[in-house]
Length: 579
Image (cartoon, rainbow, N blue to C red):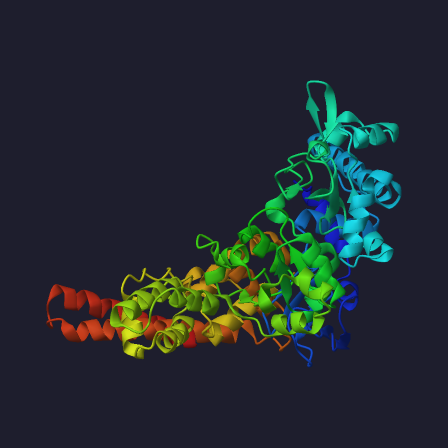
């Protein structure tokens, strides 16, 4: 857990304008700055930057936050890493507790062991006689010395302790090697995890090596290869490596992904390298595990479009269709598409056959994942008869039914009707058949907030002397939640000192609303005028409600008299508020 004082010192020492200017165009506009938003495609600057508050907010796409948010979003790191990056820029030494220091020490030792292992394996591939079959395999795949060096490809020795001895000689501790997942302890001491395999180093987003993917070579004796029946053997999860949260090549591809607004996911290490050779530098791959929501969460830091370019064989098709338990394919925050590989070849085969243009075209022509899934389901049935069409319709409807957005679900209903060969009403009935109740809405729909109440909350953020607000001043539930979120800040700040939105602890929707109000550059109205307007409108609504109730009651009855007294009191309050 980061020290609160450190966080505040780093925030105050970091210039948000300088940070934004490093990745996009920034121009001064009055007292604030405007920038071309790096988070969506635009030509006219719509991102406002407030140097004094240390905040940015894009009025085009809604992205915004403080210096930590900006580093997290542009560099694809978590809060802790963003804090370290900004602290290093500002020359601030962070306070850490002993337990955290020990954990960081273990990680540093493991990364050091892995870094040395990368070079040891790479040099063995280049110079060792026993790596001859590995070099021959790579030459046959079109890998020259520059490409091998660029990706630091290596070879694990055939003996059981080749790497162990090399790392010991370099001063790496036994625990460092074990934590790195490079060696294991057996009956006869430490032994290498990888033997007789071609090795592809795996790096995290910071560029640190965290593991390896090892490919079996047919020319190497089975007795000299660990797990001889497995074509690929990957590092196990360790102190530094968690395969469900790592993508091979993302450290290299992240900049291109952000620039193009698209990531391409392939099946293997050689496919990633082939894609990059073909000029598709947005390619990444999972590391010996199925593509999961953790990988999508990683990718959505950089883009909202992901193309799955898996092999067109049976295994590749299963990989595309796998994951009905995943949440991501049915969410609208990520555009998932499928690229169909020509002639059933994988990307590496296409590049080796000089078919780069076809590979690039297949990525450009990728179609939505749900469309691909629906067509796959329909293709399994005979549409020539009513029974086959009915089965195909129900299978396709089950896919569409999981979409939460009404508009998107309606568009896919039309698509299903077209590919199955039924009318739209029939497709819609099938989709409604077992539909689940829609999720409860958050209250932060896209409709505009009440303008007068929004101005009142904007005034509250400026914290002028004399302004006192109550929850009842906000009938709009979004504004009421936002006001409640800043109450503690208002109570601790002297009048005239604006609320620091970056310190407010609230849901993301609330923070976005507060940030957009705080960074609105329009002049603030007089708070007394806005208070009278909002109070008068609230009283009008209450008076109208009581008048409707009064008309339904019998004159002279006790309920009628009670409502009448309350109505007169409200009318007097309204006159007093107007004065």
